[in-house]
Structures are given as C-alpha cells and as structure tokens.
Image 1 (tube, rainbow, N blue to C red):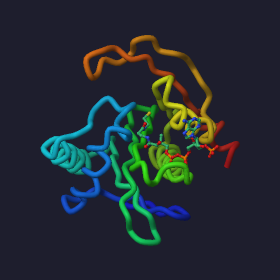
Image 2: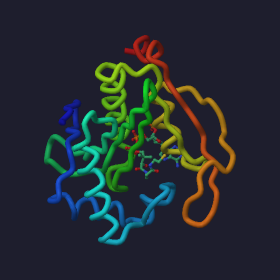
Image 3: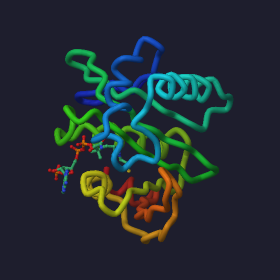
Length: 177
Ligand SMILES: CC(C)(COP(=O)(O)OP(=O)(O)OC[C@H]1O[C@@H](n2cnc3c(N)ncnc32)[C@H](O)[C@@H]1OP(=O)(O)O)[C@@H](O)C(=O)NCCC(=O)NCCS
C-alpha cells in the first residue's frame, strides 16, 4: 500500500523505521495531545508490531501509514484511516520539525480521497482535543464541519479529556474537489 501526493509518499511502516518513529513517539511535545506516549522503546516496537498486524488483516479496515517526504525519503510521522461500515476516521501525528508546512493536511487529504473513492465511505470524521489548535486547523483546512464538543469523552494518562468532533460527508468532499 503506497500513496503519492505532491510532496509526500504514504507507505507501510517497516521495522527499519524504528529510529525515525521513536524520535517523534518519544517526544513529549509531539505526544502532548495524543492518548498515548511519550513512548519507551518497547512501546514504539509494540506500535510497529500493531501496525504490521493491521496491514495483514483481510479485508483491511485499518491503515496506519508512514508519512515520508518524496525529496529525501525522510519519515515525518504517521497518518491513519480506520473504516467502520460507511464511516471512516482519520488521524495524524508528525515530528515537530515537520510541523507547519502543510504536510499533515496533504497526507490527510490523500487518506480522505482513498476512503471516499476506494472504500466508498459516506462520512469521514476526526476528533481533536479542544486545546489542539494546530490539529483543529488541519481539520478545518480539510473542509470538515464541527459536529460537537464531547465532554470527558476519552480516558487517558490518568484523567478524562474532552474532544471536538468534526466530519465531512462524501457529497461535501466531492463538491470541494
Ligand atoms: C497537529 C499536527 C498533525 C499538524 O501537522 P502540520 O503538518 O503542522 O499541519 P499543517 O501544516 O497541515 O497545518 C497546521 C495549521 O495549524 C496552524 N497552527 C499550528 N499551531 C497552531 C496554534 N498553536 N494555534 C493556531 N494555529 C496553529 C498552522 O499555522 C497551520 O495553519 P495554516 O496552514 O493556516 O497556517 C502536528 O502539529 C502534530 O503532529 N502534532 C502532534 C500530534 C497531534 O496532536 N496529532 C493530532 C491529534 S488530534
């Protein structure tokens, strides 16, 4: 599984990616709004094992892909799409040195295209924590609409967290193409 965009290649993670993956999964700034991390080395190995198992599932409904730069092959982070029936959920996490260059938006756009065109999804949603302004901006750039504020929706790292919920419908996505 490999997707090419203007500046990126989204591809399967391999065990050889360990060092590049651990660089951002162990970074407290990158993990501030994530439900997991900062990772120990063992946790990052567990993540790579989990994504390999996901890639082997048939039919495939979960995609956790490495986001790499076409120019130099650098691994910038990860992007994901999870399919449940006619709904999809997307997410992303990049290394801080790759932030604010439009990479997450470019990667997520491609995952949305794949979800709508290949999985024939009707709706794709994303969540982010209310304080995660960068992620909320990515979601806005993707053309998603805010659906709600989910109070104490997730339990992680010892407490409950609110989430903002956004989505885009297939017809809205097509209209924006
Ligand atoms: C959220 C994240 C994926 C964004 O990646 P990115 O490649 O920087 O995203 P983009 O460059 O496509 O867009 C970021 C936008 O947010 C804006 N932004 C970034 N930080 C911001 C802040 N603190 N306040 C307001 N806007 C902010 C940027 O200016 C940019 O908007 P613009 O294009 O209008 O200028 C990245 O910061 C990240 O990996 N964070 C850690 C993991 C994470 O939080 N993942 C999301 C979980 S829901």
